[in-house]
Image (cartoon, rainbow, N blue to C red):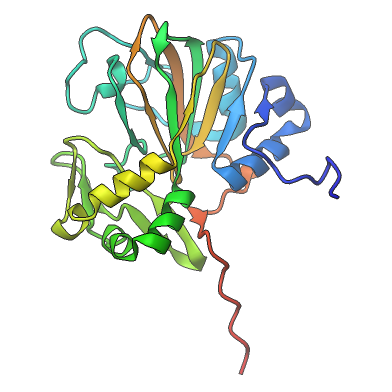
Amino acid sequence: MPSSRTALPTADEEFTLGALGTGGLERAASVLREHGLVRLGRLGGRSDVLDTAALLMSALWHHRDADPDGLTVIRDTGRHEGRVGFAGLGRGDLALHTECAQLPGPPRLMLLACARAAEEGGESRTVDGRAVLAELATFHPAALEALSAPRAAYFGGSDGHFAAVLEQLPEGRWRLRLRQDELARFSPEAEAHLPALRRVVEHHTVRTRLTCGQGLVLDNHRVLHGRTRFTGGRLLFRALGQAHRSLGLDPGFPAPWPAPAPAGRG
């Protein structure tokens, strides 16, 4: 039996800012590498979110909707409902997606912290892209082939980007990129397999109701995120950024099948 010191990391662990700053960062990094997601707890407010992001990210990504300090306030603004690309600032369902899919190099990490929970609904939804890849490869290989083509999808508007939904990287690693709104258009080959992709994504969806002070850190190159519709004054802080080198995140995520053995020397 492994000791608690060497136990495999679990995505159910919850890390506080204090723990991250006093030796827990290495453990959190291990959980992030293993599961693509880290849970946070006891966040005291905006300053705690910024301090936590500073431990995990080398620099904050200044999103279009971010405030000067780099955080974006995710809430129903009362003026963005129904606007393409602004679903997160309404109170309706937010389709599962990766952040900034329209950019050639989307930010690696996203931190979401709850400052005020919804009265009803507002559950965070997450999907591990590694599980999606495994199911597609096993049961829908034609879908995986179409979705991994370099021009499987076009994300964004006039300044958008062609990319694979599941991009194969060197050394048996993969990267996920997806959005499911009017700013995503798919090749005919990929579009034919979208129903299968959506079924697989739904199969692996996990729902989490964040309460005040709780948060999530997601590997944005691996994990889809979304939200259910809500009522009340739900309010979250979001930080985006590149992963700090100390986290040891290699590009993408490992394939869910054994890596091929190295070729022998002649």
